[in-house]
Image (cartoon, rainbow, N blue to C red; front, top):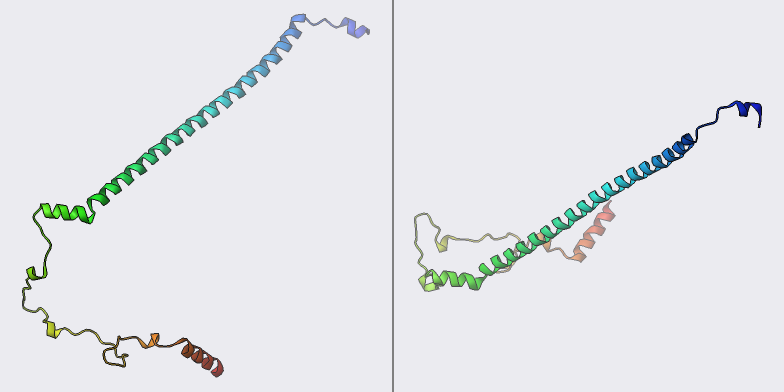
Length: 151
């Protein structure tokens, strides 16, 4: 040992123990903080997952209720059911002999009614067809070729 090292005061043994203990405690505190943060994040994720499952179950339940209500409505509005309801109220099916026509002033008479006739119909009694729909594929191709030649 050199003279300088001999003159230095010796460090107290409790200081080295304190230094190593404080270092270990520091690592333990850091580990506890990280572990606590990990647990807090996992708890929030688990809570969010449970909320999603609960809301998903509520959505499925609401869809099932909607489907049941739609089925009930379809059953109530079915023709057979409607006939039962109407019959129980005293209504019956109308026959042609039961219909009464009440004439009033200004109403068109049957002999006054005239359906629209297309000017394009060539034959009497034929179904009116617009000239735009009378062109065949061959006529269209010929017209297209004539346009190409004239240009």
